[in-house]
Image (cartoon, rainbow, N blue to C red; front, side, top):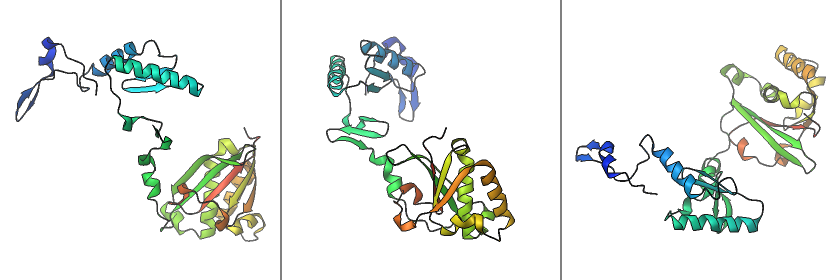
Length: 251
């Protein structure tokens, strides 16, 4: 914590009352109106020689960037030198960037960011649908987006076949901007969906869904056995998860 002295003649302006009496700050707290601005000004002055060259500073967050490891080490040394000269301290446990912890061990995902995912259990209720959008960039399928939502009360009464189909229709609607005009492959672990076009007895809902799909998209449905799918942690809380693959030539 950087302690910035408050001018003695202004300390009375920071007075606050408690049941133990009245107190005033002699160092600047962040709760004061101009405290963030003052702190930012001081940090900008300290790192003025590096800002926009290899350093970005926002309050007490310092980001060091460059193109090579060698330059990174030099810039780190320059930052540490300035910190030392101005008697500013850093806390190692807080050295992280975009949810990643940087330490002597290397770069690791912040454990706090994955606690929820690690605690996910297999689905025990039959109410959600979802999908994963992949694209093949020539080096295998890469995920682009994930989608899921809970079923509305009437939808929970749909037969399993319609729930599986609803998941596909829903994701096509959500990702319409990506899928229109593209060659799309839908992979599902519900075998009967690959024969939906040849089914002789479709209910009105299925006919309506097929009409939407056929009139707006160019797609094929393929079956992939559930046991051969790689487990996706985002799918653990959701049932009826289908994947949609778009060609590399898509817009």
